[in-house]
Image (cartoon, rainbow over all chains, first blue to last red; front, top):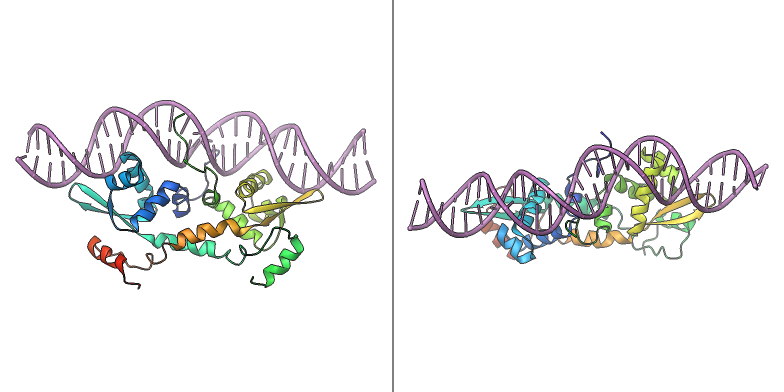
Length: 116
Length: 116
DNA sequence: TTGACGTATGCTGATATGGGAATACGATGG
DNA sequence: CCATCGTATTCCCATATCAGCATACGTCAA
C-alpha cells in the first residue's frame, strides 16, 4: 500500500468541519433539528448532497439522527467540537503578537511572556 | 467541469489543520522557529514530507519563512487560527448540554434560553 | 398492496491529496 | 568553479473526496 490521502484518522471532527457546507449545516442545526430536505433547501444544495454531508457529520458524532415518521430529523451534537476548540485555543497567546516585522529572536523572547 | 474534491476555498486554514501532521508541525513551531530538517526529524517524517506540509501551511498563512544561510527557518503565524477559534466558539453553549436522553422538543426549548 | 414522499446509497467523472523516491534548485564554503 | 548541505519540486501511485444523477430503500396512507 502506498499513498493515503490524509493519513491517520481519515474521518475525524477536524476533517468534517473542513468542508464549508458541513460548517453551514452545523450552523443551521444550532437553530434546532432539521429534516434532510429542509437542510438541502435552506442551504441550496441537493438532497443527496445534504444526506451525504449529514452522514459524515453523523459518523464523527457531530450530529444525531432521530426518526420521525418518514422523516429523519438531524440535530446538533456539538460535544465533538470541544476538542477542536481546545486545540486551537492552545495558540491563543500567539495570534495577537504582531509578527509583521519581527525577527526570530524577538519572537522567542515574546513567547516567554508578554501578553499584548 | 464536473466534480471538485472539496468545493470552495480548497485550501484554507480549516483544511490545513485537518491534517494531523500539520497540526503537529504547528504545535512544534510554538516552541520557536525550526529548519525543515529539524521539523522532519522531530516529527519522524521525511524531509520532502515536511517541506510539502510546510508549503501548505505557508500558503494559508499559518507559517512564515525566513532564509538563514542554507536553511529556511519556519515560524508560527497563528493569526489564521483565530477565525477558526471563533467559529468553533460559536458552538460553546451547545457542547455542555447533555443530549444523551434529550428529545427534540426539549432541545428546542433549551436553545431559547438555559445556560447550563 | 400500491403509491407517494422522504431519505440513503451507488455509480461515475473530475480532482485533490499524501507518501515515497529521485532529482532539481539554492546557498555556502573552499 | 566545485562540492556539499539544506530544501523544494516532480513523478508516480493509491486513495479519498465531492458533485450530479439515478435508483434503491423505508415509512406511511389509502
